[in-house]
Image (tube, rainbow, N blue to C red; front, top):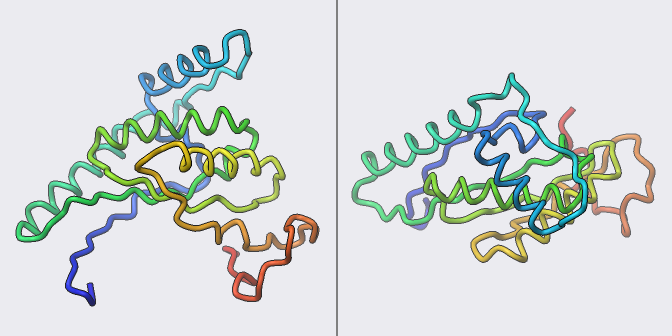
Length: 184
């Protein structure tokens, strides 16, 4: 904004939920079909949408479309071509394999693009007590490498130490700028 550019943003999030929170039945079917097609004969867990989450995908789409509409009305004189989704999620999916989470990201991004997003920026997930989170980190990295309109914006979340965790989580101890950054 200091350079004369307009930035409008909306925070649309739900803490402590799986990526599946943002899925509907059609997206879930696409996910399973992609896994079956890419890995015939491999048995991945059949993921489901928690009944308490039903409608969250539609709500997310509705809120995003309304936000884009409001921006067109309120900033009619501005160039609004970039509609960026900033993604920081994955802690709740630490038990998934890299293949599963990466495939879920692909399906989610297809839906987000259909809503109107043009860029996917990932804040790589950090450690939250389960070492299998490495699979989600790898999935996020690979997704950003494989997807032309997706970028790994930062890995800083992965460098914030988890209180009480062994010191061997990091190849090199994070610098002081990452100390005491976690939610409490």
